[in-house]
Image: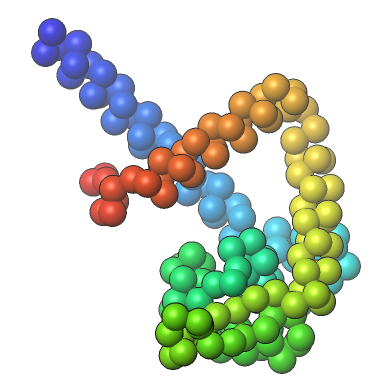
Length: 164
């Protein structure tokens, strides 16, 4: 009985390593400057590459505090605060004090920012359709379902990362 458990643990370790590598590859691809440039060009938008992921995050998760936005973006609080000021100056986001704590700055997307994220979404869909053209609808449905399940697991998972 112990030996079958060890085989399963060995297999899972290999799977976790493959999963980690696949996720790293996806994040790496999503963070490539040329992919951001292609998305912005496809959307017909001129915006600093460092700003548009924050704009999209604010639209998706907002109202959102600067601290949470920095955590989600994997960026320093002061950097995100400066970038948020730029988005605000462009009229794409509004900043306000938090209701529970007036010291906290909370960002929401403006109507102009929403129009921009909608243009980015349309462009992302066009590019994704090209990239995934040879995938079946069933495979895409399964992938999305599994990623949503993984997201739920990660959100509710352990507070510390698993050892590598």
